[in-house]
Figure 1: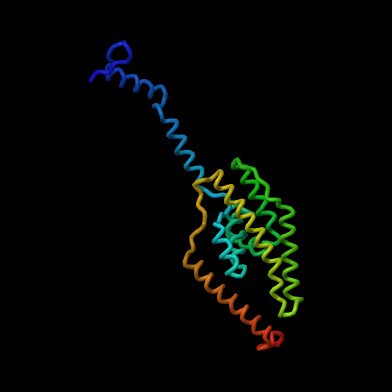
Figure 2: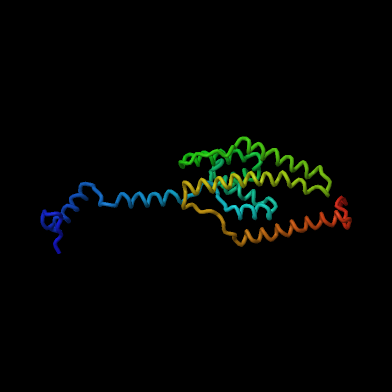
Length: 225
């Protein structure tokens, strides 16, 4: 089959093949190769998430129903992902245990990596970290100082702290959606997650039942064992 371009006559396929061979020898790439390479490069860059992004539903459900244990796990995964201080398991776990005093380092690393990825943001790390620490102290003091009937009031500063962590979590989801669209968001509930939800819910229900019975005078919450 002969191909004609304008009026210059037929093109010999052997000439086209020879030109392609010569171009490859000179280091040229076939048409469309650059676009294919750039596309594959983009898909590989956007696979690693910044931090440990979790869906809002899972974050709230696990944080409330596990009575604070998920906050430690969330901190551990973020310290490890953000490599604070080194990203190794033991150091990340220690920092997560002491999250009220180590949150500033987590927020600083998150801002730094977001800026390096091309999406500079601010999570107001200094006031947020101070507020988180002070509210944690207030919650502990209230839990020890208040009478048993009012001990649930100590949950108020703890819930405010949880709201601040949820704010950081939403920022993390937004950053990953902008610069790492292929990054995985932890939204599935594993068997361990479901087990934690059930056990935590039982503990919360028993605590509420104890407060109700105490308010009705059926049990004495101040009685020491």
